[in-house]
Length: 309
Image 1 (cartoon, one colour):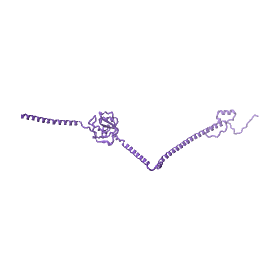
Image 2: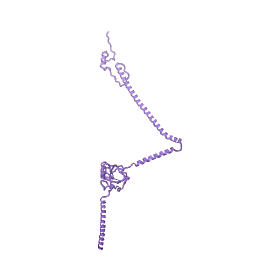
Image 3: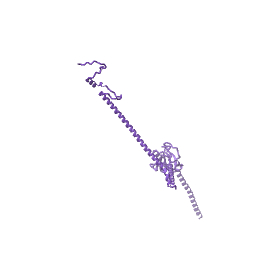
Image 4: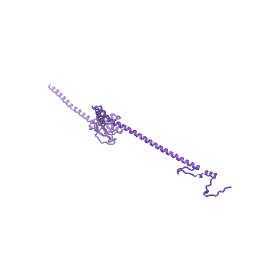
């Protein structure tokens, strides 16, 4: 009886020991499998910053802003990787590309210079290549920036915060000056002093306007007078020249008529040429027919004239 009890106790003890021994390797086996699984899928990494090279893709690190880059909607979210995004941006002549999650961005300038961070901030695996980081999700999150080789020296985007701050400061100064004017206008100096102060300040602009108008009117009148004088002088010169031409033509006609009629020609200028009428065959024939003396005879000496009784 005792032997059977001892034997059953020994079997129970052996079973417990075997179970404990068998359980220990099983837990270790599962632990080793999980370690192997984690080791086979490395964490995504952002390539370090590299100097840009023409016609080549180079990482420019991780940034907390995308600047003014626009999203490339033609790149599918499932195919997003640095290679696909860089290829699309370079084919469209964009020198800068950026990745965040499943989105691709293209632009002509890097993000603002002060938004560059450590590369370990970009940890999101790219959908098409999980071993590579595509920025990190968030608002705004982080962006993996690349140079596509189209332009190896693009500028950094400058947000319009400086101009807006300057405009806001100018508006603030304008508001303050306006408040000072309103406060000075509401001072207890009385309406008489206000009108006395307003009169000198308003007088110069009005007098300046009147002076400008008077000067413009005077200049216009002088210009019209000068133009009228020039036109009158031109007309007078033309008329005098025309009268001189008519008078000269009249003198020529009078001289020709006087010469033809045998009278003394009027005094004419030396430019008028006279022709001897004796050279005209018609006039020579007329003289012969009228019984005129011969031109080839010398009539300077007295000759005896014989007459029939």
